[in-house]
Length: 159
Picture 1: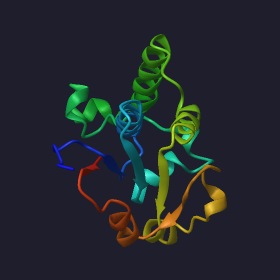
Picture 2: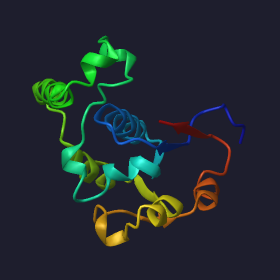
Picture 3: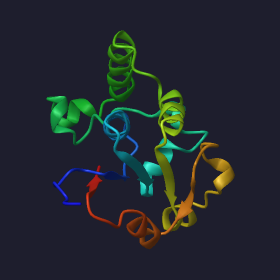
């Protein structure tokens, strides 16, 4: 059988748990599944907050150092600006029926997306698997993640 260059698997690495990064990764993984493409997400460093049970319901928009905010860094750093921007974004997401982070994780796992936590980052932040979203597929090393992504038609994306 000849390979036509089609995407067979998306391997998404999520390194930051800002609301905009988490939704970007989740939408891409969900879109892959809707197209019949396998998808896996590897949560590393601060991306672990997107699957940490005590943190995933409280993610924020990054207002400082985010050029897409179109506001001066000084203004973005004012007390309350992050909360205002996050509230505004969540209201817009509600208007288009975007699920919240926890519900989106449930949708992803139900559709077959594999969710992996980075062992190194878990150790560094002193997290246990029990601290994480219950449907997490496991805690793996970077090498394990690369093995998961081996094969023709696999694409890796770092967010």
